Structures are given as C-alpha cells and as structure tokens.
Amino acid sequence: MGRVGVLLLNLGGPEQLQDVRPFLYNLFSDPEIIRLPFAWMQKPLAWMISTLRYQKSQENYKAIGGGSPLRRITEEQALALQGSLQEKGHDIRVYVGMRYWNPFTEEAVAKIKRDQIEDLVILPLYPQFSISTSGSSFRVLEKLWEQDPSLQKIDYTVIPSWYSRPGYLQAMTELIQQEIEHCEQPEQVPIFFSAHGVPVSYVEEAGDPYRDEIEGCTAAIMQTLNRPNPHVLAYQSRVGPVEWLQPYTEEAILELAKEGVKELVVVPISFVSEHIETLEEIDMEYRELAEEAGIEKFHRVPALNTHPVFINDLAEMVIEALDAPNIKFSDVAHPGKKTKMYPQESWEWGLTTTAEVWNGRLAMLGMIGILIEIMTGQGPLHFIGLL
Ligand SMILES: C=CC1=C(C)c2cc3[nH]c(cc4nc(cc5[nH]c(cc1n2)c(C)c5CCC(=O)O)C(CCC(=O)O)=C4C)c(C)c3C=C
Ligand SMILES: [Fe+2]
Ligand SMILES: [Fe+2]
Image (cartoon, rainbow, N blue to C red; front, side):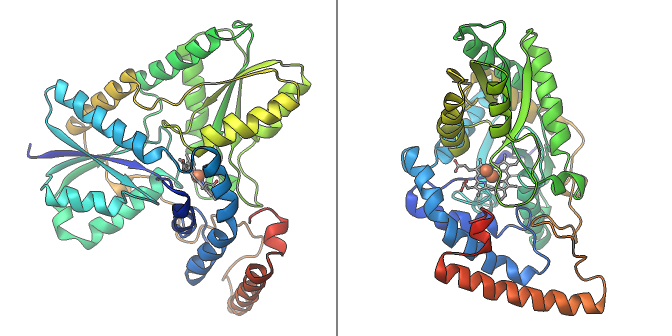
C-alpha cells in the first residue's frame, strides 16, 4: 500500500457574518438541495434566495457568537482521527473537504494530489446517508474524478453511511445517559430524537434512504441504551413551502407539552458536531417553545465532537475500509437527472412540446416575479416563508 489518506466530508458553515450570504448562495446553487426544471434558473434563484434570506440567517449566526463552529470542530476531529490512526500504527493523513464553505472539497482534493496519495478512504461526517448531504459531496468528487486522469489512479473507497457502528452507538448512549442522570425523573423522561429534515419528495420520489437510516439509527441507539424511557423521533429545520419529513420537531414538542410532559431530553442525531441547528435552533428556539408550552426542564444532549470513543470508532472504520472491497461513487444512491427535488409541482415538466413552450413562458414569468420580489421585498415567496 502506498501513501494513504482519509478525506472527511462535511457541509461547511460561515465563519463570520459576512460569509453568510456567499455561503447561502453556494448552498442554494446545489441541485441536490433545490432542483429546478431548468438548469439556467439555478444560479439566479440561488442569488435571489441568498440575497433575501441572509439577514435573517445572519441574526441566527449572531446569536451563536457571529459564525459557525463547524470548521474548527471538523478540523479538531480530523486531527484527533489522525492521532488515533497513528496510535494504531497507521501513518495516514486526514484531509477536510467542505461542500459549501472553506476549506472546499476541491481544495482538499488538490492537497491529496499534491501529497501523491495513492489509497484514499472517503468518509462523510454524516452518520446517515442523504442525497442532499453525503450524496451531494460524492457528486462533486465524482465530477472531479471524471475530469482528472491523475485522480483516476487513486485507489479510493467511499463509506456511504455508518450509523450502526458500535463505537458511534456507544458514544451516543454515553452522552444520552449522562444527560438523563441530570433529570429529575430519569426513569420516565422522554428521549426526543431530533433529526434534520428533508423534503418528503427526496425519500418518496428520488429514493433517498435517509428516513430509513434515521429510523434505524434511532432504534439502534434505543437498543444500545437499554432503558425503559419512552422515545419520540421528529424532524427539524424545515425550509420553504413543500412538505418535509414529519412529524415536525416543533409540533412534536407541543404535542408532548399537551400530554403533560414537564421534562425532555433532546438528542440531535443527523450530525456529529455542534452547529447552528443545535446551538441556535434547538438550544434557543425549541427551548423557548417548549418552556412556553409548559415543559419546565429542557435538556439537550451535546454533539459528539471529539468524543474519544467516537474518534476511535472512526479510526477503526477507516482501517476496516482499507481492507474491504472498494465502494465507488457509482455504487451510491443517485437521484435521477429528471427528479424534481424541490419545489414540488403537479405540472409535468417537459412531457410534450406544448408543455415545453409553457414551461419556458412560466419560467420567464417566474423570473420577472422574482425580480419584483427582490426590488419590493414583498411577494409570494415571502408569503410562503421561503424568504
Ligand atoms: C433547503 C434545503 C435544505 C436541505 C434539504 C438540508 C439538508 C440537510 N442539512 C444538514 C445539515 C446542515 N445544514 C446547514 C445549514 C443549512 N441548511 C440549509 C438548507 C437545507 N439543508 C440552510 C438554508 C442552511 C443555512 C443555515 C440557515 O440559514 O438556516 C448546516 C451548517 C450549519 C452551520 O453551523 O453553519 C448543517 C450542518 C443535514 C444533516 C441535512 C439533511 C440530512
Ligand atoms: Fe438546516
Ligand atoms: Fe441544511
């Protein structure tokens, strides 16, 4: 085996308030996040949504100290993983590639080339697979590989998801157990799993295995925890007007409050680092909602970050992947090119010539509407909550 590397994939987050707008532009330019019927509309729409959304988003980042901690934590995880691999006798370099912000995936790949890595394990820091997260990063890599013969010489393998790993489950249950011990009624307190949502169409039309993996992950954590407490699974962070996976976290919290629940342990499960959706959305927004509804004690389980059991498991996963048969980008779930990811439409785009003509006209009308909305700050997109 030649020089070995690990590429950790993550989403990225704005480090300063001035990064928020270009970060959002990158995110909404991704057809794995929003796919429009015409590719040419993607960039103008991304520009429009980022322009209109960034101030609201900046307020949230301001509330957590002026930027996302994601880069710092991911780099700490990379360093800890490299150290753990070293301790196990493996001289392996660990690289970080973010999808929407620095350090970008493309920069990480350039370093991998520069360091003449010959064997590469590609490991997303998302325990469960979604076409909108790991899938989107794999797609960027797949394109880079297609365009560059020198990358094609690298013997690479991807790890699509790893939510059922024993070390991950053990680390999660340790953190949950610690939080339960702080509760007034540890035997009865409900354990509330809050997963990041995705639009229902990703799962039901595009074949995203995300919901199955989240449900499998929740069941595996409960089994490892081996406690009598009741548990609930709900989905947070909905954006835009379409239906996302249900139940929604806010509705599930209100439902528990209505049932008379006074204490709750909330477990974020889609992500292994603290970020805006744990620090702001759960710790501030959902806490306030719960307290106003009568839930007096709102506990939140911390993210794994550099938990030693978790880091050790990542290292073992890498070593096992080097010996296992390779998994290629083409082996991982891809949404069909024509799949409408978001927004959902009942209109059958492009099925007939007439439809094509009307699609073009409607698209043009849509763009005029968007321009009016940008100039006036009012319109249907504000009304439905997308902006
Ligand atoms: C609009 C669609 C979105 C989908 C689908 C989506 C899926 C998804 N996202 C994460 C994890 C993260 N998302 C983050 C930021 C973020 N995500 C969206 C939208 C979608 N996400 C937006 C608009 C933003 C920007 C923040 C905001 O304005 O609300 C981040 C970065 C957080 C940070 O600290 O900066 C993470 C992480 C998962 C796991 C997921 C699907 C499974
Ligand atoms: Fe989100
Ligand atoms: Fe997101």
